[in-house]
Image 1 (cartoon, rainbow, N blue to C red):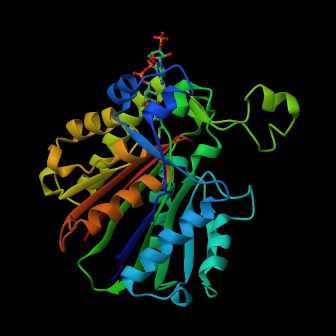
Image 2: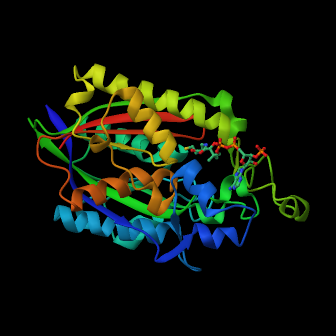
Length: 327
Ligand code: COA
């Protein structure tokens, strides 16, 4: 049996840090409120002239370097993002060109904060089907460009960044992606979405003046569904593999809000030391949170051979999913 193994991880965070104190000067909020309600202390903001494809390319280069794989060997590039450089073509194609991954075919996946686990699921299926041997899976965002910096309900939450993994085919391997469980429910669109610019809301001076195109969210409602969905999809992964919470070496959830992570971990019955949290440093970087956290954990030596790693994400759509990995 062929399994998809992660052989390299990489990440890239913009240098510029925007603290809660910086945001206090922009909207009616406080450092204390943001920390108490979200756990976020600071986030990274892409520089002028720095785009999602740049962050994605740097993260991918670091993952390739760790894996000892050259860009020319890559069969496919899948990029989870909702903040591509352009509405089209796919930002993955720009990354392909940047890397010189001439053999790869490249496409984006739009699943908001679940973008990386959706992309990982596609890439793992591709490898298991024997269609290719080496795949780059990336989550990359510059959310600072679609956030309304006059809306205190949303602007405090988000940041920019990118993470990537190299997946390789391994014959008869115990380690690799064990399972993927993905879900969607389009009935919740109004709770979390970006109205413009697509083909429903097209550019006009009026809608820009009214701040219509920017990210919209009803945070309170999203919170409840997020905890429920993250819990259920995490338990679904464990059940499908005949495992229980005590078998999980590290739970790497989508980093949206510390309270969501703690509530979810409690419901799954995980201890604090089984949960990886870095939302305080980067805020919610949507599709990038999980691969950035994986790379940090990996480089810190927290992911050891044989470990069971549980990834779970939830985001706009709504979309949600879990991936169980034996490292
Ligand atoms: N600073 C100060 N006050 C703020 C604020 C801010 N940045 N943002 C909102 N408030 C106010 C609200 O206006 C409201 O005031 P009111 O009671 O006078 O109306 C009050 O704080 C409570 O707002 P509420 O939305 O109920 O707070 P909350 O405890 O639900 O926290 C979020 C808000 C956004 C932090 C929280 O709902 C959340 O994290 N939701 C999920 C977001 C998310 O993860 N989205 C992406 C999913 S992948």
